Image (cartoon, rainbow over all chains, first blue to last red; front, side, top):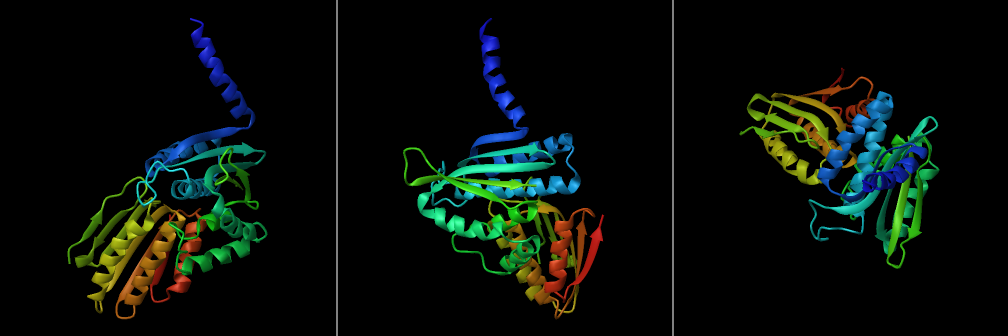
Length: 190
Length: 125
């Protein structure tokens, strides 16, 4: 009989941390298109009950899709072979929470250390752009051919920046015991 | 020409292109894993149809509640094909959207600015 409270305690620790940080959704594991579609359904239901206004819900949902598809396309830890372009399953973490008047979205995934600089070069300029500059950069990118290394359209980070109410925050953390791998974290405040 | 019909999925829209009636419709949400793979064949069929059109009125009804960044890029290419065809045809684009959705409204405005040959009707609901 003792095993039930002990198991519950394990969850309790986790829930308390999640509650303290006002986490309304958290997932860590492999991201595939099916997982993204299933999380979409859950997030929409959670945002309805969390009382987010229509435009805010839409912005959160849009930033979520861009972040999760980024993990699905670019995480360096894949279950699927690298040559396979479709039905990808790649590893990462994603979280939505609220703090004060805002919602925040946080995602993390391993990337090749060799790619860190090119990611930084794409993100850094967005941090100092005004809303209008982000919009016009988005319009420009929409009309340009997609970059060679992009499976999306080169519009993912710009879309996240457009949905956010503050500059995107990002960070690169060395992966333990593997110099070729770096953990890429990005945060959008909506 | 055979119609093109693709049923909606949770992450891809219904495509209902009735070429014989010159009625084209896109409806639902669009965030497929690979937007180029989804829209590539659709745009190819559309171009083949448009190449055979002359002096007809084509009605395009678009009712997309959400589309991700890579779909946006492909949709832009699709409307570009329609705009090119509008020099020798009349192309009406009915842009249905949630009246609160400023992103879809703004994308509609982009289309109106970039593709002036289309008869663009903003249809907030």
